Picture 1: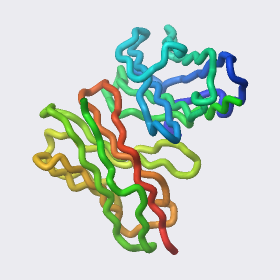
Picture 2: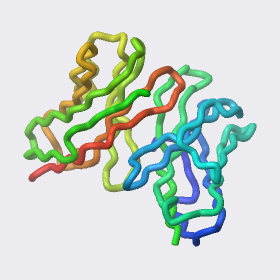
Picture 3: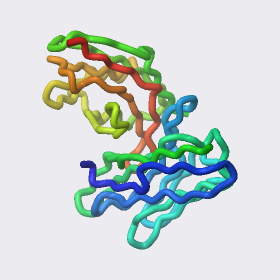
Picture 4: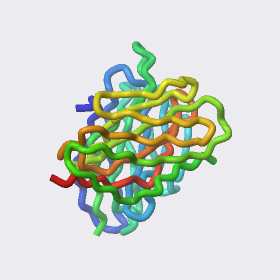
Length: 115
Length: 114
């Protein structure tokens, strides 16, 4: 158990819809990262938050947005969903405020299927 | 931009034997971090081993060890005494700074033959 939790585990929705993926980081971790794993694109970095502020952006579509809340949990919002958005979405956390640990540990992922 | 290349899409090894997975990377940085992550059929991403570029000594974690060749920009993973539970996709990853994103290779699928 990595200590990173993600909900829901599975999500099935239709094209054009909007979904929200949730991530709770390991206790004490300030950074949250979102990654997308799809068959054709592999594992790609989407966005990073650090202590509530956006820190870095990767290949994140304009239809996607994220935020990190004061309790450090993060949400990834995906809107106007397309078939190609079907993927496994991972959250990872690091940047521990107590230990200084910087290794990223991953949550179990949310499997999104857009029909 | 940093890139990570895993040139072996698939590998197989007999149980109890040793196997080496290859990874090369491209960077202009002198200080960085390298990782191997394992993704079993459950799809969970599990950290196997990490290496700091400033450390010359190769990292070791039980049956897992790396051969880090900084000048050649090579970072291979050796699995000794392979076990059935080692069957998984293995991803090599690069990280530039302490709290920065991971850049992944395309992965190597490892099959363990009983």
